[in-house]
Length: 346
Image (tube, rainbow, N blue to C red; front, side, top):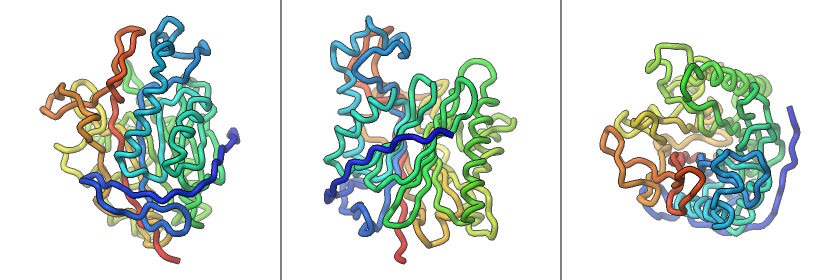
């Protein structure tokens, strides 16, 4: 377990929050005054920084126009645009950020929106996972999974005296060949950390966010053992979260009709690959509590393309590239996902 530097930039800002259905007043103030906390997860699709280190993917090498055309700044501007459009969520996981340098550049660009803390994984993968927050980040670890697979970022976020434990994940993609075994390895690392936290406090407030490259019903769809359903033990049964000694984790994708699920396209079909998975402690009416029905993928028109998936829905407006030449109009091949949590008094 590698301990990492946490960059804390302190300032206070008063914020208005836009809900997914429109712009309405909401209390997303920082510190003890907060009454609602919005958690956000977004795979930003290869946000590389402004220089070539030799570790980039080949289409981001020295002959790419990405650097001369300052497209790294476009990436940062797009992150800011999405954060503003989603109401400036206070707990933000970003996936596929190149390194700590790029993470710091992102934080610098959104400090005026209220973000004050940052943490980044320290693994050897080409891209990293990062967390930014308008609350203080008190403890951070980068948990190795297996060779060639990304670390899991673990952070304790202080929400007005209540610790919210955040695990930011980016599991192995569904490439050709058998890859579920690698997702199972990541799931085992994440599950072990959840169990460690629950041993200390059975009702700890924990969210697992990020790109799991797994659907909410992966086991049913494949008929095989999966990391998300069988190792993490996810469920759509919210009532089971209040059972004594509950150890399942709640996946709010199950709240939605199947026809409306999905955060990314895989094999021409919508799949719910990005998640905000919750521990039983987020259903006990102390500390933080999940606002049932608040989870969704954010489908703003600017994040969607004119192209259509097999079911007729518009697909994500992904980052544009052809070989090593990049455009500046697209955003990502994933949509952000969001969930709201009430801050209970006392």
